[in-house]
Amino acid sequence: MANIIILNGSPRKNGNTSSLVKSFTDGAKASGNTVKEFYLQTMTIRGCMACMGCSRNADPCAQKDEMKQIYDAFMTCDVVILSSPVYFLGISGVLKTAVDRMIAVFAKYGYEACQRDCALLMTSDDPQYDESVNWYRNYVDSVGWNSLGEVLGSGSAQAAYDLGASIN
Ligand SMILES: Cc1cc2nc3c(=O)[nH]c(=O)nc-3n(C[C@H](O)[C@H](O)[C@H](O)COP(=O)(O)O)c2cc1C
Image 1 (cartoon, protein in one colour):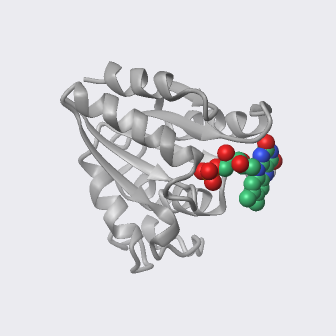
Image 2: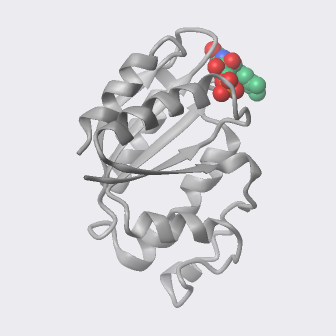
């Protein structure tokens, strides 16, 4: 049984990306996993200040906002799901802000202690995902995470469910 966190970067709780998130969650729970979703749009998460307090004595970040909930959940999770609509060939701003802020745990605990499995859930209007998926692949490579898969498109509910169900 795995402990899974989802960083949902869609602003629409009942939109296309959230629908994939729901399918994934249903599959993951059916396999006995625990799932905690962070709906980033309504959380107070400010941009990284690059103060590098995390490299000194911040705990783990000098900024005190709701990113703390994600840091705490991350340290005990096995799998991180990044979820976003395609926004101008990239990812949504709220997801980018949150993953930038992950630097605090990488700096404080080291990349080895922060190795996790991960996956991408993403939707767009066009079937053009290359830039966003490349961003995801480069991010997870750079932080040492192991990707379990990428589910792309609103029509991929079954694939999202299956990905969730495959985790245990
Ligand atoms: C600011 C903004 C930028 C977007 N940029 C793109 C884009 O570059 N390519 C694309 O195919 N769709 C783009 N879209 C459409 C969304 O990616 C698409 O409708 C997505 O499924 C919406 O997900 P949601 O229902 O979770 O909000 C954009 C939408 C918005 C609001």
